[in-house]
Image (tube, rainbow, N blue to C red):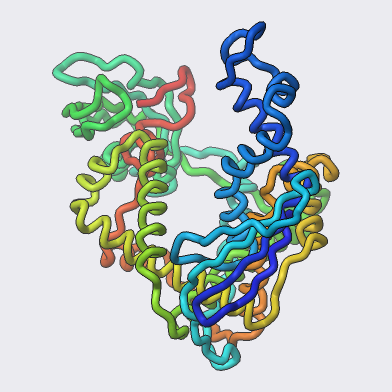
Length: 476
């Protein structure tokens, strides 16, 4: 981890004194030797295959150290400013103090321009919405029902199919009168409402009785993952073989043993209740933290520097482009789906960039105001906890983070988190009820929110079945 000392020259000018430790310099030095070996031509060695020892013998340590500094200085500088919790708005003026021994590390000074310090509100006066825990029993009942399904029995209803019923169907898909391979099933079992059948098929089945034959028209979008169906108008020939309801058993100790690892009904109920409570409390804590940060940023008096806004906007665009690419979409396709143009997109990205920066600059100012800092012991503890939770070797993980130069990036992240911890412990919570699913959906529709959906996913609405039928695996 680099040691960074900050001297504030005036309200918007800082001088950073940065010490790159010997272990970080050595790692960069070794990388530079390998890089130079690929570029150096020496008699007796194949081009690009000069070993590090030969490079060092030919050029000398001083030359390699100079090249190492030239190549890695920008990364060291960026890591230092992030770890120190500052956000420059201009290129740094770099100087190297004389008299430092390169073999013991590198020291440099950076004079930078930063945004004016935000004026923060009195935290105790901020009222922040904190959701109440919603109706816990509803969640417990839903999970308990799903758990007991394994011991349930199916019974013919003798009535028309309705939401929640279990149906067994045969279906085949026709395009221009020809059956589509891979889009048919015999004896396929599904629960209406679970989404294992296309929405059009579920809607057609509701209200029908066993023995009903249906023809259901479905039009597939151009980007459907099955080439035989993309952009096509198809007809599903559907035979409803049975309509049943799942009868759940009464929860007893014997049933609890059958459907879970617990020995009694009370133990199973307590476990489900505890797990749901823990999850809900975690989600509520996350919502409260987000609301607190938003409230701080809104109340702070600050101006977002345009240089930082533009840089953050470009980062957000690059991230969106990468995310869409992983889903098989281009930016143009995404805009076409959402009914927007590039001007709308960049306006949204600019707003997001400004909002991000307001939150970030407010939190960094809070950390400085409260004297919050992250030391080496804090980093070691964080790395240790993460390594233990993932089953990794603690000593190796600590060494890897510190020797790779990532310690300063981690320090910057922890600084923000500690600032948020202080914030949520100080603001005044205002308890409110969470919106219902219907209210949340209505709000999303009102805001014209269009999620990016991976083609072929359940949410894409183009998937015919998700798992397997009674006789064959089928997915369209």
